[in-house]
Image (cartoon, rainbow, N blue to C red):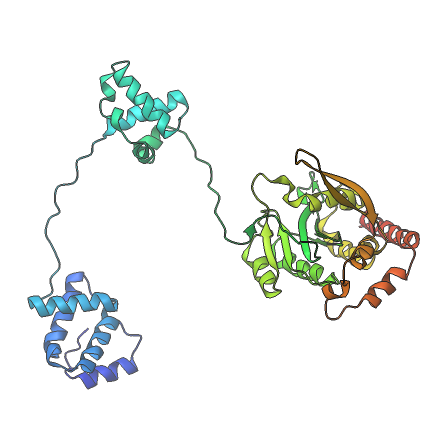
Length: 409
């Protein structure tokens, strides 16, 4: 680009305002440095005021694509040396490699013979080969560090001679706190789990997914169904399930499955001011309540056979209009009493069986836990609308119609 006609700061400023998309394209770094040097000399950069120098630097940054800090370094070099030149000196001699091709070959040979032991075990073998069995080939490898063994295993020469594959390392995520919830006798802490309704082995098709949510204290249970556990299907369903609870939800506990431990679910829970927790490693009882309800409720009524995911909407309607009401107002649940023996060992005894709705009423001042638009009178009206047997028969009738629709389709 020939910009020799622009010999004043005002012309440069006008150019910056009118053509912000124009850039300079040099054939080499030498051309770019020459352009910067000529521009600084032609405009007498170092005799300008500070505000004018800023305009010139902005112009050079735009035309070269260099960053502000990089341009500042080049301007300082021009001021101190009177010129800007590309370094053309030769590099020094490379560092001497202590472990060469022969050593890498010995490492590969040893790993193949021992099925690739750990780094410390491998270095022990190198030391024994040299000191005990007097193999002079291991004179350098006898002193190799454990960390450098792993470095050599990454070289192309090593990988070309071996066929070892490392496991995919899990990616740590900061979503959710890894601990067991402690509701302290207050409702609103959910245990959440997923139940998959089998695969169609012939058509290679996934079945419907049941999403089971259970309150830790009351065992108030709300279930939904979804086609897939992708975010665009699961997140709206979770929000719908949380909305069906008559009391405020404060906690959301699940296993470490990616359907729950992701940014979309975390954002939804943060918006609803719900604390998210996840199960701890090697603590299978962290979500025991959800697992037990999967078997005693969902599997008992929905079975194990494959159900097409296209029926998710119909199943979800059945849950919302019939099944969830039956579970919480007419089906007794067992509540554990923890007994501690003389040795400090805890044992759960199930002597108390109660309707979740009645369990809610047994809490001190139960109305304090309800949502603003919910009252005890409304819950009582729902509980007394049918007897337990009537609600069960109506639920079974609706379930029969639901399963009949599966066969028709």
